[in-house]
Length: 212
Image 1 (tube, rainbow, N blue to C red):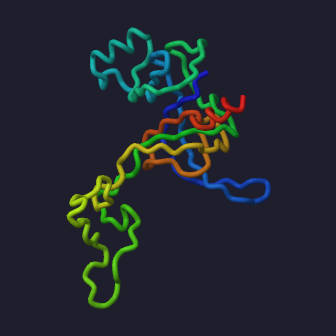
Image 2 (image 1 turned 180 degrees about the horizontal axis):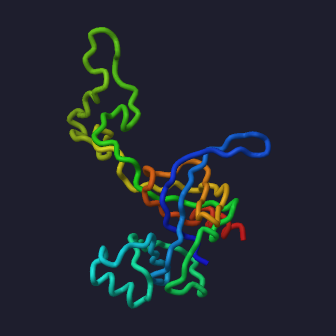
Image 3 (image 1 turned 90 degrees about the vertical axis):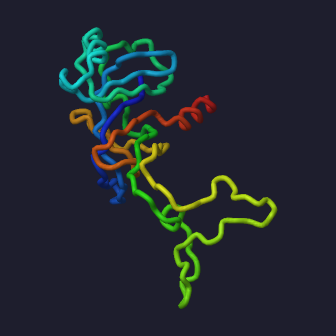
């Protein structure tokens, strides 16, 4: 079975356990996805139906050849191991995961535009006393004759957000198979309705393989 899905972020809510403790969770509308292609290491998934007239002709020909309804989103995902039982055209639902599993969620973080260093890199700022005119400024970034340059990676103001981010080892709290909804503990990158790629936690799998 392939433990990978495409989905849309719904938003955040919270859950209560038997002891009354609150756990923040993110709801994800995960799948159903259709297998469009399989390689040794990767699997190509299609997500969300789309009208034929909105698809380019070469791509429409591919879907027609596979006898699959056109999909809006196509992503090739590394998903190992891939079972020999998986076939092209097969539908994958949220039931590939279960409560207690750990997953990695990948998405595009919320864009925040051009930001100063205090917000972007959590600088503490300079003197805020009377007369100071450099409260939030970076100050000098230069150096003396040696080494006489600015080091690579120097934290500076600039564009913040709108980057591909992966949050690892999120615990699956609940799986709603009827509505194809996945509840995972913690936050997931991206705004509401943004595309999320969900895969089995890579590091957790490596730890389990070492223990075996």
